[in-house]
Amino acid sequence: MTEILVAYATKMGATKEIATRIRSASHEVTLQDAADVKTVQPYKAVVLGSALYAGRWRKEAVRLLTRNEKLLHSRPLWLFHSGPLGSEITPQPAPRKVREIAARLGAEEPFTFGGRLTRETATGFIARKMAQGPMAGDFRDWEEIDRWAYTIGQRLVAAR
Image (tube, rainbow, N blue to C red; front, side, top):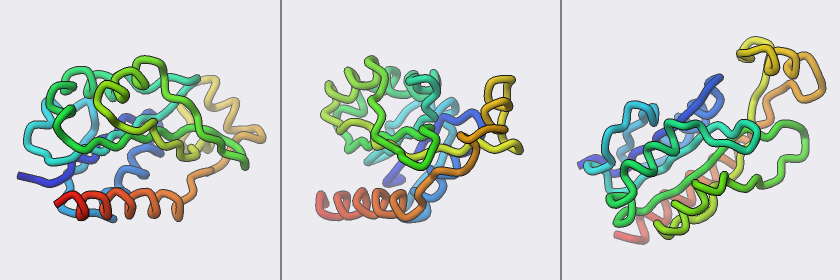
């Protein structure tokens, strides 16, 4: 049995890069796109991240939660989202449905990480326009991501 599933839902790749960083900081980990996760049955714990666009999670991340809610109830679960842009990243509330599921599962509110929007990665008209303005850049704090991943690892060790 693999210890941890780190799953992600991304549009432009920034959330996958965060998930990859979290994966490298922990135990035996499987990294997988949330759309490809059929069940969390083989895992002892789950970390799930989604890109956050206009206050919404990617549908494949929400589907993973709803499809596996019964199994997730008996496993440690950590949630994160990425997407806020700018120099002052403040915690963003999860969408109502995600907050409700997290509450039923006893999971903490999703942790907020800054996002990335660059001309090279922007897809879609609005994103390409935003990537030309003051919101363009990479606002992910890798030290903060490493600390969060380390905390997860410590909590898993303590739970053994």
